Image (cartoon, rainbow, N blue to C red):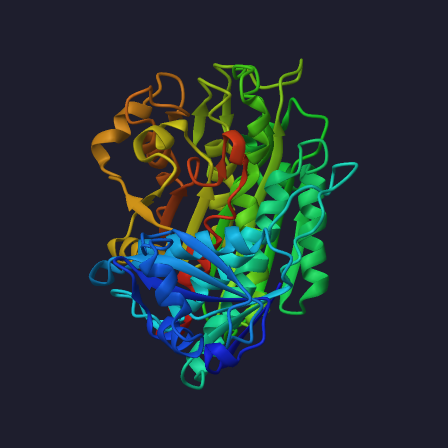
Amino acid sequence: MEFSIKQGSPEKLKSGSIVVGVYEGGKLSVPAQTLDKAAEHRLSDVIANGDMNGKAGSTLMLHHVPGIAAERVLLVGLGKAADFAAKPYLDALRAVFAVLQKTSGKDAALFLTDLAVKDRDESWKIKQAVLLAAESGYRCDQLKSKPADASALRKIVLGCADKPNAAAQQALAQAEAIAHGMNLTKELGNLPGNICTPSFLAAKALALGKAYKSIKTTVLEEKDMQKLGMGSFLSVTRGSDHPAKLITLEYSGGDKKQKPVVLVGKGITFDTGGISLKPGGDMDEMKYDMSGAGSVLGTIQAIAEMGLKLNVVGVIPTCENMPSGKATRPGDIVTSMSGQTIEILNTDAEGRLILCDALTYSAKFNPDTVIDIATLTGACVIALGNIVSGMFANDDKLAKELLEAGDYAHDRVWQLPLWDDYQPLLDSNFADMANIGGRAGGTITAACFLSRFTKDYRWAHLDIAGTANKSGKDKGATGRPVPLLTQYLINRTAAK
């Protein structure tokens, strides 16, 4: 899908569809007023007849409106003018693209990003329009014998009254890069475990290194990990026939002396639970257990496309968690790369076992900040649902930066406590720690476990178990938290 920003009057713009907003009570937005005047009050007449009341997210398509160059006019409800904030704006965009995807029009012009949205700037409005347009056009049917016909919609113009400035053009370019990164994350998440293996993820990472000169990709094999003493990571992969990989992607966009931000993504390409076998229902969704890894790859691609002036390292520990005669048993004790020993009470708490060694390994890059991203605990879904991701941090400033980036990107996080009071729940009689702390506070004790391997740097943990994918009729990867991570990195670049 192509995107552009164009100055012009809506009635003169030739397009398959022209989109304007109507506030609740039938009040026309300024672009809608312009169309109404050119169409000799056709829009006002429709509203007077009660066909459009302006309720948030409502739509009405008009065809062959006189005095209008576009083939169609799509009216979208914006809700109450006094309450026009982020949610009704996003609801309006979703409704618009749902309708446009069903038309035969190849292009559309939206006169919505000029509208005043409470506490949001022009760049935010542009980014959200692009991301939601891209989301509406995403399909994952490449493995079907007869894929559905592709949508006709190919081009989106964001109309505006004034000449677009440099900030608007930059927002457009950044949004396109983020959309591409999200599509990569979705593609990897939606692929089945028999295709998206650890070796497949490694090949994708190597391909990114070839596509962008700013990215250097390295893949470590199991023998390399054994030399490094990654006993915790290797304990998870023992039951699988697919070899584990430790992937690093070094993006060099900043000064050589600049300390990097390290993104560590959990890459369990399929999680059966191991010997602590999961129930069969919905186990197919365990292909999404590599969504943290997918989000790191998507974020690295996005910032490389932007040419962001920052140094970022992606670290991806990836393997399968399978039961077999070689698999790790509950009660086994392993030694992590840090030298700390772990009693594995539950083999289904495997994400933290691969992450802890990857977090120890991340110290070699002399990082400014380390952020790990993982579909780590079902407890996080119970606590926060599917709306926000859980967030923990050992640094208050870092937590605030992530909260602000998530709020701006509308890819939000909520901070949970990382208090020492929870640490005793991980006590073991036989090792330095257990890998689980019981049912109570499961999301928190998982983060407490990881915190024992991150004492040498600023660190945050994102639990995306509830936000990385959807279930039910809308089953599929969401591409989150690529918008959050990219916005965080954009903000850091701007601050520097």
